[in-house]
Length: 197
Image 1 (cartoon, one colour):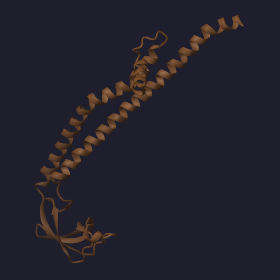
Image 2 (spheres, helix red, strand yellow; image 1 turned 90 degrees about the horizontal axis):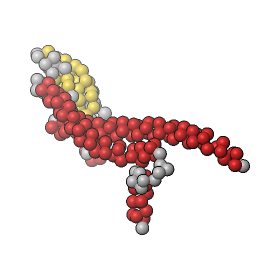
Image 3 (tube, one colour; image 1 turned 60 degrees about the vertical axis):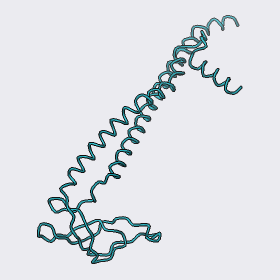
Image 4 (cartoon, helix red, strand yellow; image 1 turned 90 degrees about the vertical axis):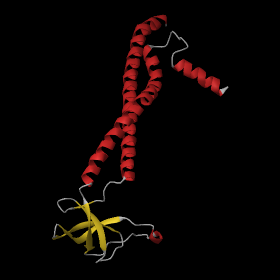
Protein backbone atom coordinates (compact mmCIF):
# COMPACT_ATOMS: atom_id res chain seq x y z
CA UNK A 1 0.00 0.00 0.00
CA UNK A 2 2.83 2.41 0.88
CA UNK A 3 4.55 1.71 -2.45
CA UNK A 4 1.30 2.47 -4.32
CA UNK A 5 0.85 5.72 -2.41
CA UNK A 6 4.44 6.73 -3.09
CA UNK A 7 4.05 5.86 -6.79
CA UNK A 8 0.82 7.89 -7.03
CA UNK A 9 2.47 10.84 -5.28
CA UNK A 10 5.44 10.69 -7.69
CA UNK A 11 3.15 10.50 -10.74
CA UNK A 12 1.17 13.46 -9.43
CA UNK A 13 4.30 15.50 -8.66
CA UNK A 14 5.77 14.93 -12.12
CA UNK A 15 2.49 16.00 -13.76
CA UNK A 16 1.49 12.69 -15.31
CA UNK A 17 -1.98 12.86 -13.76
CA UNK A 18 -3.05 15.64 -16.22
CA UNK A 19 -4.43 17.86 -13.47
CA UNK A 20 -5.76 21.00 -15.24
CA UNK A 21 -5.15 23.14 -12.13
CA UNK A 22 -1.43 22.45 -12.07
CA UNK A 23 0.64 25.41 -13.22
CA UNK A 24 3.76 25.19 -15.33
CA UNK A 25 5.87 26.28 -12.34
CA UNK A 26 4.54 23.28 -10.40
CA UNK A 27 5.61 20.96 -13.23
CA UNK A 28 9.08 22.48 -13.42
CA UNK A 29 9.37 22.26 -9.65
CA UNK A 30 8.37 18.60 -9.77
CA UNK A 31 11.09 17.85 -12.32
CA UNK A 32 13.93 19.69 -10.51
CA UNK A 33 15.11 16.75 -8.41
CA UNK A 34 14.98 14.21 -11.27
CA UNK A 35 16.82 16.72 -13.49
CA UNK A 36 19.57 17.17 -10.90
CA UNK A 37 19.95 13.40 -10.52
CA UNK A 38 20.02 12.84 -14.29
CA UNK A 39 22.48 15.74 -14.70
CA UNK A 40 24.78 14.23 -12.09
CA UNK A 41 24.57 10.79 -13.68
CA UNK A 42 25.40 12.21 -17.11
CA UNK A 43 28.02 14.80 -16.12
CA UNK A 44 29.59 12.85 -13.23
CA UNK A 45 31.50 10.31 -15.33
CA UNK A 46 32.61 13.00 -17.77
CA UNK A 47 33.92 15.38 -15.10
CA UNK A 48 35.49 12.51 -13.15
CA UNK A 49 37.33 11.37 -16.28
CA UNK A 50 38.57 14.89 -17.04
CA UNK A 51 39.74 15.34 -13.42
CA UNK A 52 41.46 11.95 -13.46
CA UNK A 53 43.27 12.69 -16.74
CA UNK A 54 44.33 16.12 -15.46
CA UNK A 55 45.63 14.67 -12.16
CA UNK A 56 47.44 11.91 -14.06
CA UNK A 57 49.18 14.46 -16.31
CA UNK A 58 50.19 16.48 -13.22
CA UNK A 59 51.56 13.31 -11.62
CA UNK A 60 53.57 12.51 -14.74
CA UNK A 61 55.10 16.02 -14.74
CA UNK A 62 56.01 15.67 -11.06
CA UNK A 63 57.51 12.23 -11.59
CA UNK A 64 59.56 13.48 -14.58
CA UNK A 65 60.98 16.24 -12.37
CA UNK A 66 61.63 13.72 -9.59
CA UNK A 67 63.86 11.62 -11.90
CA UNK A 68 66.59 14.25 -11.76
CA UNK A 69 66.82 13.94 -7.97
CA UNK A 70 69.28 11.69 -6.19
CA UNK A 71 69.75 10.50 -2.64
CA UNK A 72 72.48 11.59 -0.24
CA UNK A 73 73.17 10.87 3.41
CA UNK A 74 72.42 13.63 5.89
CA UNK A 75 73.46 13.76 9.56
CA UNK A 76 70.87 15.12 11.99
CA UNK A 77 72.12 18.04 14.05
CA UNK A 78 69.39 17.84 16.72
CA UNK A 79 67.18 15.08 18.10
CA UNK A 80 63.90 14.79 16.22
CA UNK A 81 60.79 15.06 18.41
CA UNK A 82 59.19 11.67 18.76
CA UNK A 83 55.53 10.77 18.51
CA UNK A 84 53.35 11.62 21.48
CA UNK A 85 52.00 8.06 21.47
CA UNK A 86 54.51 5.48 20.32
CA UNK A 87 51.96 2.73 19.59
CA UNK A 88 54.80 0.17 19.98
CA UNK A 89 56.67 1.60 17.00
CA UNK A 90 53.57 1.89 14.81
CA UNK A 91 53.71 5.70 14.76
CA UNK A 92 56.57 6.71 12.49
CA UNK A 93 56.09 9.95 10.64
CA UNK A 94 58.59 12.33 9.11
CA UNK A 95 59.49 15.60 10.82
CA UNK A 96 61.55 18.33 9.14
CA UNK A 97 64.67 18.74 11.28
CA UNK A 98 68.09 20.49 10.96
CA UNK A 99 70.80 18.37 9.34
CA UNK A 100 74.07 18.54 7.38
CA UNK A 101 74.81 16.84 4.06
CA UNK A 102 77.28 16.99 1.17
CA UNK A 103 76.12 17.83 -2.35
CA UNK A 104 78.43 18.52 -5.30
CA UNK A 105 81.42 18.45 -2.95
CA UNK A 106 80.01 21.24 -0.74
CA UNK A 107 78.74 20.80 2.80
CA UNK A 108 75.24 22.16 3.25
CA UNK A 109 72.90 22.53 6.20
CA UNK A 110 69.14 22.85 6.29
CA UNK A 111 65.91 21.11 7.15
CA UNK A 112 65.48 17.49 6.09
CA UNK A 113 62.63 15.01 6.59
CA UNK A 114 63.63 12.53 9.31
CA UNK A 115 61.74 9.80 11.15
CA UNK A 116 60.19 11.04 14.41
CA UNK A 117 62.21 10.04 17.47
CA UNK A 118 65.61 9.94 15.69
CA UNK A 119 68.58 11.11 17.78
CA UNK A 120 71.19 13.75 16.96
CA UNK A 121 73.98 12.30 14.79
CA UNK A 122 71.66 9.80 13.12
CA UNK A 123 72.25 9.39 9.38
CA UNK A 124 69.18 9.59 7.17
CA UNK A 125 68.81 9.32 3.39
CA UNK A 126 67.35 12.43 1.76
CA UNK A 127 66.45 13.37 -1.79
CA UNK A 128 68.07 16.47 -3.30
CA UNK A 129 67.47 18.22 -6.62
CA UNK A 130 70.13 19.41 -9.08
CA UNK A 131 70.63 22.60 -7.05
CA UNK A 132 71.42 20.52 -3.96
CA UNK A 133 68.22 21.48 -2.12
CA UNK A 134 66.41 18.84 -0.07
CA UNK A 135 63.05 17.71 -1.42
CA UNK A 136 60.20 15.68 0.03
CA UNK A 137 60.43 12.03 -1.00
CA UNK A 138 59.49 11.47 -4.68
CA UNK A 139 55.91 10.76 -5.63
CA UNK A 140 55.24 7.04 -5.47
CA UNK A 141 52.74 5.08 -7.54
CA UNK A 142 50.47 4.80 -4.48
CA UNK A 143 50.76 8.55 -3.86
CA UNK A 144 49.96 9.26 -7.51
CA UNK A 145 46.89 7.03 -7.29
CA UNK A 146 45.75 8.83 -4.14
CA UNK A 147 46.15 12.20 -5.85
CA UNK A 148 43.95 11.00 -8.72
CA UNK A 149 41.29 9.71 -6.32
CA UNK A 150 41.29 12.98 -4.38
CA UNK A 151 40.99 15.02 -7.60
CA UNK A 152 38.05 12.89 -8.78
CA UNK A 153 36.33 13.04 -5.37
CA UNK A 154 36.67 16.83 -5.14
CA UNK A 155 35.45 17.23 -8.72
CA UNK A 156 32.36 15.10 -8.08
CA UNK A 157 31.68 16.97 -4.84
CA UNK A 158 32.00 20.27 -6.70
CA UNK A 159 29.65 19.06 -9.44
CA UNK A 160 27.04 17.97 -6.91
CA UNK A 161 27.35 21.30 -5.06
CA UNK A 162 26.97 23.21 -8.33
CA UNK A 163 23.90 21.21 -9.39
CA UNK A 164 22.37 21.60 -5.93
CA UNK A 165 22.98 25.36 -5.98
CA UNK A 166 21.39 25.58 -9.44
CA UNK A 167 18.35 23.63 -8.22
CA UNK A 168 18.01 25.84 -5.14
CA UNK A 169 18.25 28.98 -7.29
CA UNK A 170 15.68 27.58 -9.74
CA UNK A 171 13.39 26.71 -6.83
CA UNK A 172 13.70 30.27 -5.49
CA UNK A 173 12.78 31.70 -8.93
CA UNK A 174 9.85 29.29 -9.23
CA UNK A 175 8.59 30.23 -5.77
CA UNK A 176 8.74 33.92 -6.73
CA UNK A 177 6.79 33.25 -9.93
CA UNK A 178 4.30 31.07 -8.07
CA UNK A 179 3.64 33.79 -5.48
CA UNK A 180 3.25 36.41 -8.22
CA UNK A 181 0.82 34.12 -10.05
CA UNK A 182 -1.21 33.53 -6.88
CA UNK A 183 -1.37 37.28 -6.22
CA UNK A 184 -2.49 37.96 -9.80
CA UNK A 185 -5.12 35.23 -9.52
CA UNK A 186 -6.37 36.61 -6.24
CA UNK A 187 -6.57 40.14 -7.66
CA UNK A 188 -8.78 38.86 -10.48
CA UNK A 189 -11.02 36.66 -8.29
CA UNK A 190 -11.02 38.57 -5.00
CA UNK A 191 -13.27 41.46 -6.14
CA UNK A 192 -15.88 39.02 -7.45
CA UNK A 193 -16.02 37.25 -4.09
CA UNK A 194 -16.33 40.49 -2.16
CA UNK A 195 -19.37 41.47 -4.30
CA UNK A 196 -21.01 38.16 -3.41
CA UNK A 197 -20.77 38.96 0.28
